[in-house]
Picture 1 (cartoon, rainbow, N blue to C red):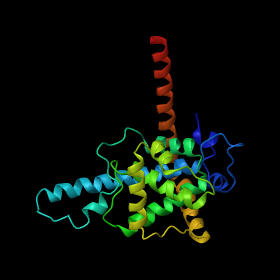
Picture 2: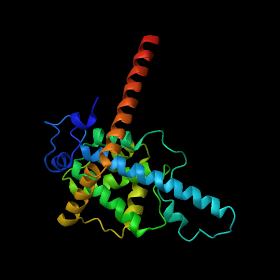
Picture 3: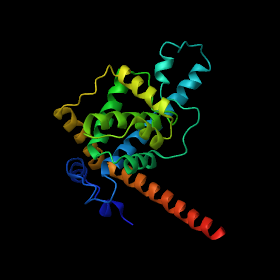
Picture 4: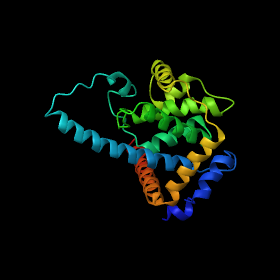
Length: 229
């Protein structure tokens, strides 16, 4: 099965989704979600390799890392969620119906946050909470109507208290710089489009294929469970 042909993996498809996506007319998940999942996954993998090398160095030398420890670990969870980034973003999209432009703005916020806090690294322990928080804040900025924090918390798999705290932490650490003008929005759209056109299509197609395989396995498991019952 060719995802690139059936899913329309092209820069123009991404921009069409961002500006013209309609829940009534489009039944498929917007391409921007798969592109964002691919970008975040590659960043996460790179960061985990960097952190691994740093841990090896720190095991031989004493180093004080307490200066920004709290800020760096603000999105950390005790247990790593057993859900891929692609599946997590699809879940958020399915239950919140946040438009494709929300995910572009969330990507802007993630980039700003990482620039304002250079010691912060996206890892498996913080990526899910970072995504649900930035998407919720972006949704409030972009959309006219929104769900309550408690609903976003349930979708993201955290408590309402955690959701409220993470929102405030993000806003204060970003110095409340949530405004995204048209030129900035366009520049990030172009970056996401380049991800599709310049070699990124393979990673996106691979992400889509993995997500589809997981869904297929889950359907098979559910069928077997029904037969067993």
